[in-house]
Image (cartoon, rainbow, N blue to C red; front, side, top):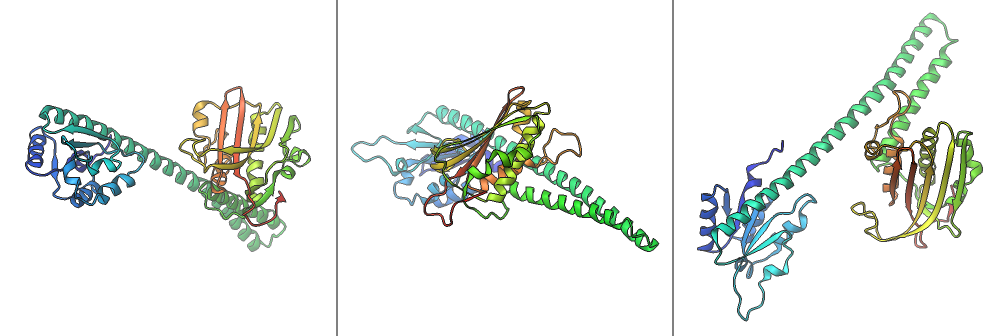
Amino acid sequence: MADLSLDCERALILAGEPLGQLTFDLLNKAGIEALAAATLEELGAALDHGAGLAIVDEQTLESSNLSPLQRYFDRQPDWSNLPVVLLTHTHKGRAAPRARTIDLGNFFELQCPFDPASLLALAHSSLRARRRQYQIRNQDQARKMEAIGQLAGSVAHDFNNLLTGIGGSLELIDKRLKQGRTETLPGLLELSRNAVKRAASMTHNLLAFASRQSLDSRPVQLRELLCAAQLEPLLDPQVNLKVETASGLWPAHVDPQQLQEAVGNLLRNACEAMPDGGRLTIKASNQHLEANHFGRHALPTGDYVRLSIVDTGCGMAQSTLERAFDPFYTTKPVGQGTGLGLSMVYGFSNQSGGHVTLNSQLGQGTRVDIYLPRCNDQMPGKATSS
């Protein structure tokens, strides 16, 4: 399935003579494409065009400018971990070569003079590992393109429906005007206005998911936002609400209007997960997080305000949970949801310098945690309620 170029299957060699020619001939005889570079600059240029393996004689690095090689390793994407075979020599009473002072990453040492079978074994295993890296990259790219295609198709479908409604209303308005019948025009105009509002809301949610909306971030006290008297009208009567806010709750640095909309989306989702009623718990607390708290979704080390929304609803299957933040993904019947609510929350929290996590199990309810940066004394503005 992976479409690999020949450049990604080749071995690049940087070694003086006769070691360089010996290595080149050995690889060619074994059917491995090889390219010998005369200088470190040539090796760096060749690496930029793709490589499956680099074989480097450490002696060629001792008097060279290492920046081309170091620059390549520093710029490697997350999927890439180029295998390097470092040909070493016995050093008596001398300092370790400069090659040891740079981070070669995924490298193997092979003492010279080497056994040809050992080099070939290293070369074959390294190329297999490199091939898997490119396959993973191509699979990731394919998934991204599939997601983009689904997003584009969903946007086109939903906007086409809205434009059809607007166009139909305009045609009817034109007919009524020609007939001199104006009594039904207010209703048709209202249909068009509602369609425009839905289109504007969809655009807003897409911008939020892409973290491209304009935010008016300021110090915000969440206690007013979480007032039960303001939240209960948003809930179904059979839902029992409990609100807990920590004593000495820090102000958050966030756009209050966008935060209200995000909370509204989560409350609607919670109510839909509890059609027969249930318990909804909302908590706000102070949290100090280290940089590695969320793994690859890293937040800077610092203080955050955590807003937790926990329901006792039907929960989600693992397959649904994995796609919950995807735009336009919904398990609701056609016409009963755009699938943009959670994606808006995801984009808004990221753009605000925070993060959102989602935990759920079938029959066990759902928990959403939004982490918002604490407003410190250096941030401008006075803390306000939402």
